[in-house]
Image (cartoon, helix red, strand yellow):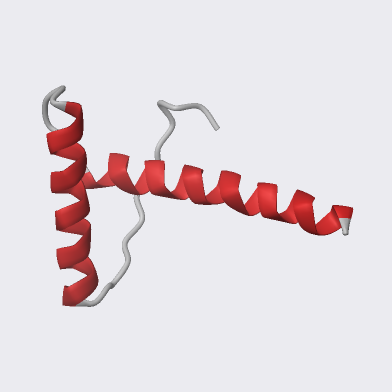
Amino acid sequence: MEHNERIQLNVRISKETAEKLDQIVEYYQQGLKLGRIYKGDVLTDIIEKSFDLMNKQKKMNRRY
């Protein structure tokens, strides 16, 4: 998928989960110091890292 191609996701999450996301965004903001960090960018990063981890675990499971 091209990085400039985007779709909008409309999801309902609990208030607690939304607060956790806000804290994660704040954490990213403090760590990068490159300007404003958006929730979509943080979610994209989390999903990409989780996807990579999932694929690594799948490869490890196939070996055994």
